Length: 93
Image (cartoon, rainbow, N blue to C red):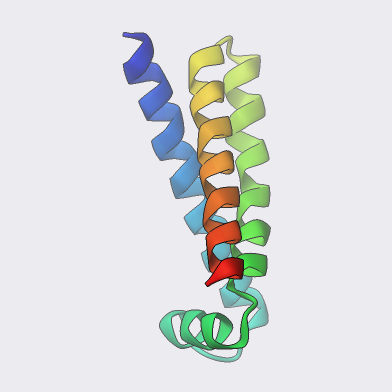
């Protein structure tokens, strides 16, 4: 049961990150989604887009805390740590 709650939070965190990235790209890029991601990877600022998308993780994190769902909040936190690891990997490669 606890693992299921953490997994739900993780999925919500990843989804919030992806939605945040999409909102940022839609608002500030003159190119499409895939083109922007390709250009950002080639020019080395994909990590910045991922981190800006991760800002949206605050919303489900605090909503889960407020609704007394600490394990789901923990899953969102794990998703944020996963995003940070992806950013580190993209900076190294």
